[in-house]
Amino acid sequence: MQPTYFPWGGYFNLIASVSVFVFLDDVQYERGTWHNRNRVLKQGGAHWLTVPVMRGHLGEAINQVRTDEKLPWRKKHIALLQQIYGKHPFAEQLIPLCEDLIGDEDLGILARLNERIIAAFCERLNITTRLLRSSELGIAGQRSERLARMCRHLGCDAYLSPPGAADYLEADRFVDMTGVKLSINDFQPAAYKQRGATEYVSHLSIIDVVANLGWAGASAYVRHGILESRG
Image (cartoon, rainbow, N blue to C red):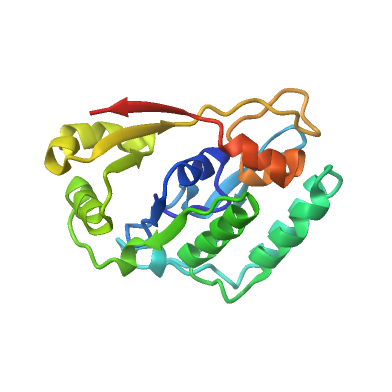
């Protein structure tokens, strides 16, 4: 999966469900996607947290994209999280971590910022999955071909795919190509009590989950999912 900014619970469910997780950090960056933004709860509705990035060349990879430090986005994100989650039951466990991660100006490459955030949350959610970067594996190829080579390189006997890749994996006959068992990760988020919301707002950043449930509650939450086997 591409490293995304403060991902939702389903992203962590995927990581928790496998023994090795690969950040696809050398694929093309796409504007207006989860690569540089996610949603939190503000005044009872979803609100975007967006990291501004420098305009680069066409086809630039995520691990080449730089955050735009001419804009005070780090201070704004920290201030907003303090404003909307500062009185939540688990704010003291969450806000200082977010401040450290967002405020670290050494994390000026978007992929590295996202990877550090994800790794830090995994540690506190007791997710011990091995995290790797595709850029460091030295494996070329497109789509299913590259994925098949990664599976062989890592000695995988099973591959857990996000739902968005299911169709092309089947079209490419991934199972026949590799002999690897293919399963589709279909995380079904359960509703939880959200402070400040009259109705549950689903698919928010992991920040919202931890703010309302705490680390232990969030750890249990992200491990609840349904697997649909194919092949």
